[in-house]
Image (cartoon, rainbow, N blue to C red; front, side, top):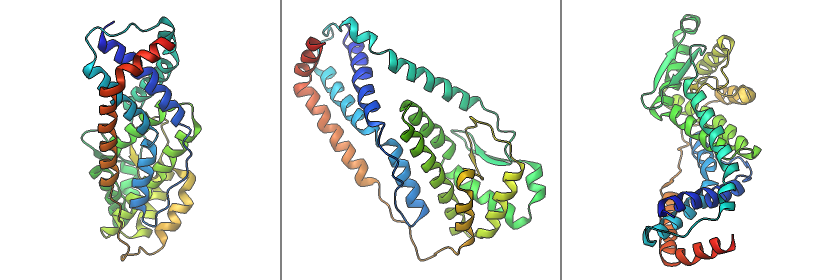
Length: 281
């Protein structure tokens, strides 16, 4: 059988199984005094379950690198075992398409656009806010745009759907959404925005909005379930002496080193492992 086809089948079955098993990873909101650090740690927790699958895929790529063009034949039963992963993939693709196709004209204010983020503002909200509150709302959305948060929201939703039906995956996504709005609030305030002005803009925006279930946009309102906590945080003075410190470089370096080790393992021992697996099945 063609080597690339065998690689695709093995990657779908083995990496999909490992990813599904890792999806139970509990929510456990990260601890951080700075909202900016809290958001980055919550973002990494969304992707943590994908680590083992990435390392396994690197090992399979190592096997494919030294495997002849005509690899071993895959048992028919293994092909049928791919059906559950196909269901998850189709569901994920459908939800991603719906997210991209969703309209944003019902938003009072939001940042939209995956590659070229832009701010949309309804005339009703613009006319209903005073100058300071409007400036605060725009500063919040500019922070979303500078970090390309619509694209990050789309990717996070994609990752969450790939871990369906684990409820903990949805919990990690909601935790990060909550952290994301707090982080953009803090970023806007560090640039001179007053917390009460931003709180007034959020409340005015909520009164105007009608939510769209699959809208792929970074909004001012965020998750209304944690609105009270967010408003309370905005009403407190910002600690200007607190500087967010969080360095993901160490984590990226560790992942790169682990992937290189997995690739070497696949080159050295992949053929033996794959032959044993196919013989067992």
